[in-house]
Length: 316
Ligand SMILES: Nc1ncnc2c1ncn2[C@@H]1O[C@H](COP(=O)(O)OP(=O)(O)OP(=O)(O)O)[C@@H](O)[C@H]1O
Image 1 (cartoon, helix red, strand yellow):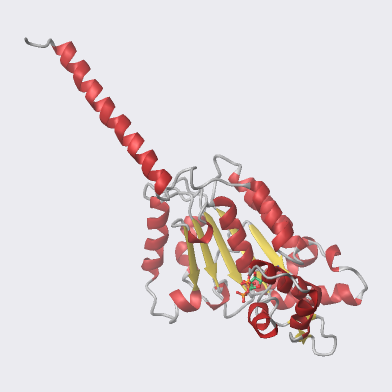
Image 2 (cartoon, rainbow, N blue to C red):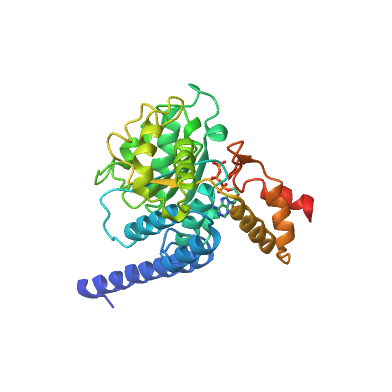
């Protein structure tokens, strides 16, 4: 028996629908098993970020506040007009990588291990001046954002990055709706550097000498000195870049140098992380073993909390 055209159309429609539903179903099953660029794997947990900043990051009241405000504001906006660009500055071992990790963990189920989180370290990924192909970096960034618009890029050791390299991705940080069909507006870029660390330390020392507590230092106290020293850093990747003069960086985030009390907390946290019973005497020994500066005052740990893990092995 012959089918009339409307029956054929209905049958074809049902078949296409079935294929479509199967496609959607198999994709959602696939996304439950393997990481996908979907809300199952990527969704911002404000409470987690707030709790982690409170409990896992020591001595950084300014950074903590800015980070929460910046990431929360950005992630709760369904239509951001540009990607979020954060520039984290401070002395070595003060928590810049840690904060990047906390941000990643508050957004991606797999945290730093997510396929959508990309960490570049200047001395590792771009080791030789003039030799690195700038287009390679552009291809990486545009390729990753094409794959997932909610991508996170972390550029470590910005002060060691060749000038010009970061300029090459500047276009992605701007207010464009899309570039070649790709929108970068939902991605996050974090730059880490030691540039500005000296001027932040100077300010922290000034407060201390004036008998004012560290917690009374505000962003305003550091803002001007920080942007000046970052801009004037002749060796760093920021030098000659127009990231700053075009105001593409949304937040400059200062990290204060860490004191002995913070090193003790880091050692206690590290013992906990290793499932050891936190022992204050051991933590104290680790902290006393660090080198502090300036030479005569001996206030700030010269490596922040960076060498705590190694020293702990020695004292346990
Ligand atoms: N403020 C802090 N609170 C808690 N832990 C910290 C803090 N600062 C550093 N640490 C710990 O010290 C180690 C080194 O810190 P991290 O890598 O975040 O420093 P950094 O500022 O990125 O240093 P660098 O500029 O040398 O890259 C990590 O194990 C980190 O967990």
